[in-house]
Length: 95
Length: 487
Image (cartoon, rainbow over all chains, first blue to last red; front, side):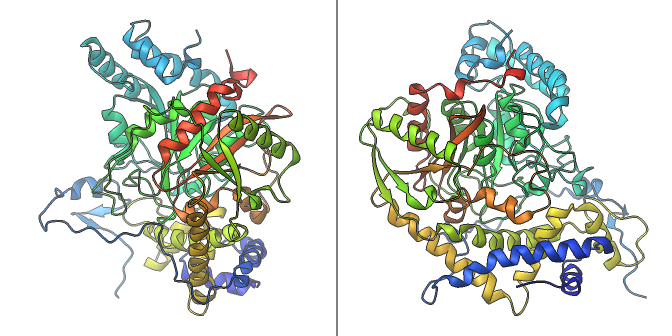
């Protein structure tokens, strides 16, 4: 399994990563090597095996539906790169 | 003064006996950091004011005759744990300016136990690495040979403890990030059972694998601090509601009759001959202590590295989607559109290893590849888990090497990600299965430390620490110091 530079650009687009053009070629080579190493997984016999997402046999806990967290909007906004009037600022999305 | 050579128990006794105060102890360590850390780069942030305030508070408690063993004992916190008022960088440019608005649960717990935080330890970026060379703040050096890596991702934690710049440090382990660096620096490092220590406020890498623990100079030191970190936390949805065993009181028990399994797969080709020799000598010591050995088989363990490099990047690509340049973290300047803001903030904020893993994760989760990679990896993960379940029907612990070889040279593997990933060949399976595992020093090859790994059944931390402590009573490898940092 190998990834072409074009495929690397596609994956980077899906992951919202801006790559420097000179990074694409080494990434293609390195990611291909990783996928090559990973491809050994196909040798395992897994027809009747249930996928394991998590090491613990546990179900999600439930809690009483009451307010447990104080409102800390100001604290959270204080660490944001750009805010105004309690809102997060981003470039204009709708024309 | 050789305060830095005392164990936690000895430090606690010294504080109670008024041989020194918590302030003096903290100043001693801050002085050592100032003198030595330029050679190691083990701290990203040193916090002298916070440390001295905590030390004074500890002295006030001690003066009343109150407090417990950890009151006034300094430590280094890995820079992956959120700390109010102190930058938490996770080794990344992305979080270079990030000051968390809350404390991680383990930070709260260790603060409440009276411990004194000296600073935030260096680490591989977002804990992705096995050599501590992916940190935005530069590589960490191994105190045993500063031209070599300390291992990773908890490289700053181990270097600070191995050089006596902190008596103990917190660390995290997703695929070996506590055990492999502990092995490379002559320390004792323990990753407890998944869910035993809260992940709240610990910046996520791969949520089904990440677990916090400690690196220490002995199993006894590790037991004291792991005890204080462990326990149920309602703020972590994967935290286990189960009382914590007493990790300290059983340390002195005999291990006569302890059944230890040796997996043949962990002694196959690829293990350096010098390391194999040290492990075999350690097995003889355990035999003299009364342990019995038998062979066990973990037939799927050769697939643990490929399984991990699907599961961990998949979870990482999802977890790291939160870094968008909007709510916190690095934000690119002058982006014209929202998409450009995301892409440039992430392209500028993440280093190459993090970008590689995000891309691998994105790829294996994408349409058309999901079944072949991600689902297949989850199935093999169960096979690996079942191997351990079968083994623990016959033995109490599994023993093997922690790493294939001693510490390698800085830069030796930075251009070859796959070679770097194979460092974790013996450590990853425990994370996939969720079982506890630890590394302890078992000798040296040409002056460089060798690590021995013990793996236990779920929640068997006390038994592992007991075995490690008994081994350390019979040997003195863990008391050796790197010469340059001894006095």
